[in-house]
Image 1 (cartoon, helix red, strand yellow):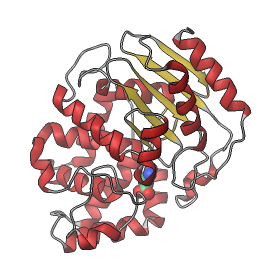
Image 2: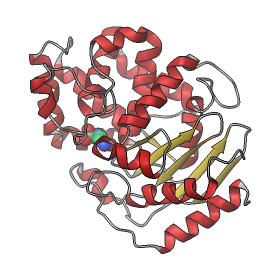
Image 3: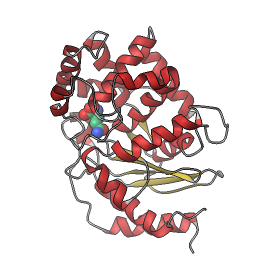
Image 4: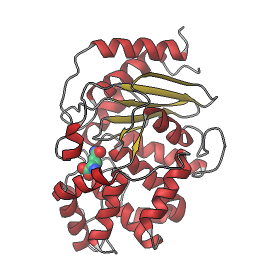
Length: 305
Ligand code: GLN
């Protein structure tokens, strides 16, 4: 049986030799400028090992991966009251879809689709006078990156072209599921999505979800053990939108993707693994990231490293 590092290296080298199919996200103009051939992975184990391959130290736009952090913050603040504003069911629809909101009276299916993440941003606007600052401080704390900032260029780029997200926030407001000013809420959402990290940073940041809610290394409580289990359940069932079933079947781990080409996945009590490759498949998930994780989990078979 190969060790953790060897499995990571071998899987990385096999996937690197395969076709790099798909296309980078271009609906956010700033994301279209990325070099599509970059590819990085990082695994962080509960017992403190970190191994990387490829472009694991290059910052990329984590986009929707950050929705897990806004969910963690909101859930740790208001607990299960959160579920009066949204559900925790898979949507089976694209991340930016509006279709279910009409028949479901403005209650988003889950917090990881755009509609749900926008309602989470509204909850943060309810909770804080300066939600942008508080959210950033929270992400700095969880990631341990003291000088982390929003990428204003990416946030503004999405602001100019994010018409579906504007439609979503106004549609939600028409059902009285947005309490604050729509512009304030959507501005927070665009900033949340503009966060950048490397694979190494992503793997560390989400370590608390593999560690019963406690930050790796420091054991600081980020969420309670049961909240950590629930967030993992939501990632498992909703983290890949209309490809959630496929990811669950092929990879079998709770995970979350972003249109910047990143994926975080984790095996509770074992490890977190971050991948980044900017070309996306038709469902908006990283083509090589999905392939890598499928092969990696096949090779490791839930091994305890
Ligand atoms: N900011 C992106 C959007 O709202 C996030 C989508 C994603 O990463 N899947 O469209």
